[in-house]
Length: 145
Image (spheres, one colour):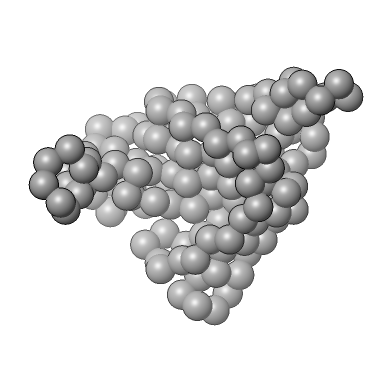
């Protein structure tokens, strides 16, 4: 399982050109599920995400977590995080989990995130989405389970 984390001042996702979910200051997370990933991978990354100290303290040092700053979380599924571009010109997505498996783990990840974080918004699994955000810092991290 792989997540791309961006610390944001705000973010939103427009789903199928209609509905929009948005957050204020917090984290925008793209979530990719690989073949063989399990709930254990999701638990590891949710714990990492909730406790990752990437928000500034009073001295401006990255010393506070999402939970400590009452930040909001926007989670968007993204199978292209497992795109392999090493050969040819078209990415291979062989390492991405099949949709049924990925949906189950995405839903599990969101459920666990809602138990750990104050505000959690999401995109829609397998929908066409447009994400808009203001990266704060910029701070962008990639975490694998």
